Amino acid sequence: MSTKSKSPDFILILITFLLLSIGLIMVYSASAIWATYKFDDAFFFAKRQLLFAALGIVAMFFFMNIDYWTWRTWAKVLLIVCFVLLIAVLIPGIGVVRNGSRSWIGVGAFSIQPSEFMKLAMIAFLAKFLSENQKFVTTIKKGLFPSLGLVFLAFGIIMLQPDLGTATVMMGACVVMIFAAGAKISHFIGLGLIGALGFTALVLSAPYRMKRITSFLNPWEDPLGSGFQIIQSLYAIGPGGLFGLGLGQSRQKFFYLPEPQTDFIFAIVAEELGFIGGSLVLLLFSLLLWRGILIALNAPDLFGSLLAVGIVAMVAIQVMINIGVVTGLMPVTGITLPFLSYGGSSLTLMLMAIGVLLNISRYAKY
Image (cartoon, one colour):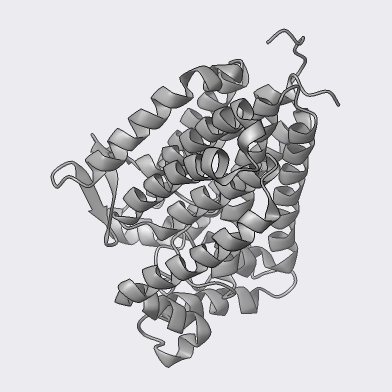
């Protein structure tokens, strides 16, 4: 890069640390009872989350100081490595099964989730491809098919785990990038119809996905089965009222809401901190997305702009899906809430992505 760099976006750094701080507090609050019962250590999940946060912060500051064009240079290699890891996950003895999905590779006492890192690798590669082939973006043969073909391949491998939530976030972020690069709306209408048919086929092909749809439409039809999580989540949100029951005073974390420190942590936020606390979290996410969009609009080149768009879209889609699930507006998909939910791979990946976004902000003209 020949453009002179400046200080990274301070507001984005502040928002990230505020969300991370809230997440650490809420992970402890949501998990203390379960951790005491299972591990005889109320801080079990909180300590691990703190370690993940520390690693993620180091990664964030590292990538904040690495020229984002490095991602263009290494995009192909990173994508190949992620594809290899995705395939390795499917091999018995290498991949670790949790909650019915073979999505993790064990590394000592910890494990990584390759599909999480595939999201960022795919975004980086697609930003490189689209910026180098922008004149073909409006064509199907040379623009749309090559880019979406690779995305569909990754989507298919992730679905073999299966992990519909992560695959959907990756696909959504990539579609936003392709649209931002100048693809025709008419092409998206056709692809949308094909995607709707494909999604329907995926739901019908797996009985547990069909149960999630029916439980979403009427969770009280099977209150002790497929509708249990949604019902317990709503029971957490409802009593929270305007100001909440108070930090640490959640009732649903007493073995009613399964593993509340992960996908349903926002329900505990709403229960303990009320409408005010939940709104504050959503406001912080909105501000983060605003800074991200500002960086994307003012990036010095198309690659940087598309890379920023992909990162912003990834965060935005993941937040919308998670909040939608927790509030009963969407079927259960198993998506974490960025920066708040417990999970090493997800937290580290998000902080890495913010680091890349911060580096782009150092060259953005605003």
